[in-house]
Structure formats: structure tokens, C-alpha cells
Length: 314
Image (cartoon, rainbow, N blue to C red):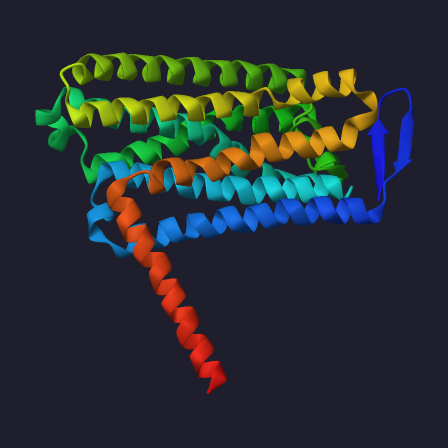
């Protein structure tokens, strides 16, 4: 494998040992399998118990888990393509990029919905049952996907207007900037990132301080909700680092020009993978009810594995 640093002026090719590339890919894939195994347990626990399926809070949580699971799989796929210097057709790249962009956009909006649900349950509990119903929760999730889709549709229209049709049949390194090459698309992307982050941050600040005032009355539920919204805020910071990934990468490569590959690998793990691991741990295992059922899931897995071992011994 080779590192190809392509610019308008020159092309630099640097040999990279195959074992290093293979080791990095194995680390990334191993982390993906580990995180998605936890996510699969959370999804299975949710699907098997009615107490979760009819609770808006857990519905939003499991949607966040599903969203991050799909996002992680797509991000890992793009990383492996890039790390192996494997080019694919633009049309196929778009097929991978679009759901990756949608799931990335959904994450902050999902966090805002979860914070709003916490606010309603603490500050206006008498109306919580009427406002936060299962039907309205699924409608909110549908609206979430529609909003995310509307932010990417202009990029698709701009691509078909500014590019020739044969561009879809060319092979490229699958990356958003290499597919949506128009400066208009890049400016729109940056503006939409800022807009979403500002709106979601305002929602988190508002819900946190409203819940904070209620928590002063020594209501344990209010204090728990306050801490939960703080965790939403922490997740938002992780989202912000995702949007700043390109800038951070360019800065570090400028400061350490000889460490381009290690920098890219480290940033990918810290920004793309670690936040996906934190969500199930922070939300699922922290919740007492979900944790209780989640433990039962692992106990069942252990028992099944022991039964399989006994049958094999026989």
C-alpha cells in the first residue's frame, strides 16, 4: 500500500509497510465489532421488553443507538476504502455517503429531542403523558429524518447541475469533498453544521437551566434529569469535534508534517469511534431499569454458551 498525497501541483507517493496498514485496519474493525456487539445487546433488550417499546424515552434512546450503529459501520467502510487506497465509482460512493451524512446529521437532533423529553417529564409532568406519546415520538423521529434529508438534497441537485453525467462513472477515493466538489456545497455544508449545532446547543442550555431550577427543590428525579441533560451536552461536544475533524487534522499535519498517517488514524479513532462507544455506555448502562434487563441478556448469553460447550463435550 502507498500513501498518495495528491495536489494540483504534484503527486507524492510514499511506501507504507503492509503490516502497518493491516494492523490499523484490524484495530478499527475490532473496535467496530466490540461496540456494535454492545449496541446489538441494547437493541435486543429493547425489542424483547414491552416496558421499553412503549416508553418515548427509550424509543428515542434506541433510535440513537441504531443511528450510531449504522453511522459507525458506514464510517468504518469509508475508512477501510481510504486506508487501502481503494477507489470506487462515484455513484456507489454516493450510496454509502448519503446514509452516513444522514445519520451524522440525526445525532444532534436526536439529543435535542431527548433533552426536550427530560424537560417535559420534570418541568411539566402533568402534561408529559399527553405530549410524549409513542405515536408522537415516532412522528418526531420521522421528521428528524426528513429534516436531515432536506439538508443533503441540495447537494445532490448541485452535483447534477455542475457535473457531467460521466462523472458518476468515474472512480474516486470515497470522500464527501471528492464527490460534492462544488464550493456552493461546501459552504452550505458548513452553514448547516453551524445552524444545527447552535439550535441544538440553545435547546440543551434552555432545558438544562429550567431543570436546574426544579432540581433545587431536592427532587431526585429532577437532579437525575439535570445530569442526563449534562450528558447530552457532552455528546454535543463530541458532535462538534466531528464537524471540526477536517480542521483539526489539517492543523496537526501542519504542525507534524511527517506524521500524516498516524494523525489520521488517531483522529479517526478518537472522533469517529470513541463517541459511538460512549453513547450506549452513558445512556443504556447508566439507566437502572435498562441496566437490569441488559444484565439478564448477558446472563442468558453465558448460559447458552455453557450449554453449547456441554453439548460439544457430549
